[in-house]
Image 1: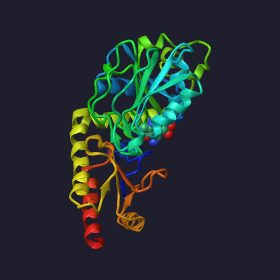
Image 2 (image 1 turned 30 degrees about the horizontal axis):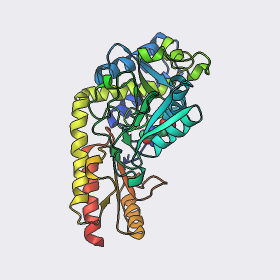
Image 3 (image 1 turned 90 degrees about the horizontal axis):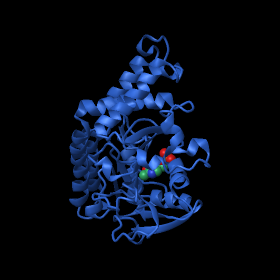
Image 4 (image 1 turned 180 degrees about the vertical axis):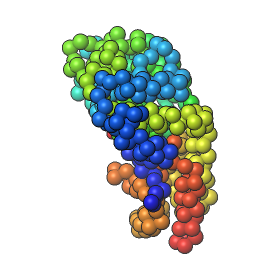
Amino acid sequence: MKRVYNFNAGPAALPKQVLHRAQEELLDFQDTGMSVMELSHRSKEYEKVHQKAATLLQELLQIPNDYEILFMQGGASLQFSAIPLNFLPSDKTANYSLSGSWSEKALKEAQKIGSTHTSSTAKETGYSTIPSQLTLSTDAAYLHITSNNTIFGTQWWEFPSTPSYIPLIADMSSDILSRTINVEDFSLIYAGAQKNLGPSGVTVVIIKKELLEQCPSNIPTMLNYQTHAKNKSLYNTPPTFSIYMLSLVLDWVAEQGGIEAMERINKEKAELLYETIDQSEGFYIGHAEKDARSHMNVTFNLPSEELTSNFLIQAKEEGFVGLGGHRMVGGCRASIYNAVPLESCQALADFMKSFQAKNR
Ligand code: PMP
């Protein structure tokens, strides 16, 4: 069996141990005589899986009791609509800080629903920085940020603070569970699972109970956060297999030493690649400014399109997968989420050095 060096941006690498465990349990899940996919979502066996995923997430992220943990569908993209539908009343303005394409998309959805204000933007730097100089509108309903910018490879290292009456909302799709955060700094955190949490299909939402009181009743039932909170994310059939995989990934994170351990290893992995870029004397050109560099998505270019193309072709031949930049920006990107081992990053750094030596 051949496993490649997987640098996919999402869906992305999963821990090998998790895949083995899923394989072992696939045909007969805990003596039920069926796979977890075949269990009723109302069965006590499935309920345990569901509950375990929520409990582990609560422990790992130290989520206080005045928050609800929800498992939703529709990806992070559905949250772009759900957030303004629930929390943008007609007499208020939704505030967005733009740090890349995903925050632009989130803003676009809010614009369909109500009044919006761009609090800050890094568009003028080609999203190589994190926006500074934030302005909040006086009637701000909330401030939305994207904590890690998957496409451009930048990450917020210091989160903006808002007055307590303005909820801070964060799309953490590409860096949840990769570093310690203080959940209490946020009123709502959401993340599609397919990068750091598991396979695609489930979106985790961590929401302050206080905020739930604001959900209006005249919006579609499935888009109302209250529906999911009141029914423990079992209002309708949840993506049971994705939630099961999430619970296995969370087990794995705990076994590795929790988020602190993840953070330490992620830093080491990112530093290996950024050092390779910095020591290449301009052969590899990092996209992000140094103080905005993401520990999850390392974006870089080579001096010409031809070299970039050759780099990607040869990398593929050597077993490196997913290194092409997002179709919007081109270049190269190594996504090094929690499940990408240090050895993969070391192998990539070695490959980058040898490619440079042959092509300078
Ligand atoms: N936000 C961020 C930061 C992302 O990276 C992505 C997906 N790459 C999305 C939102 C959209 O996620 P989904 O495909 O789950 O809708």
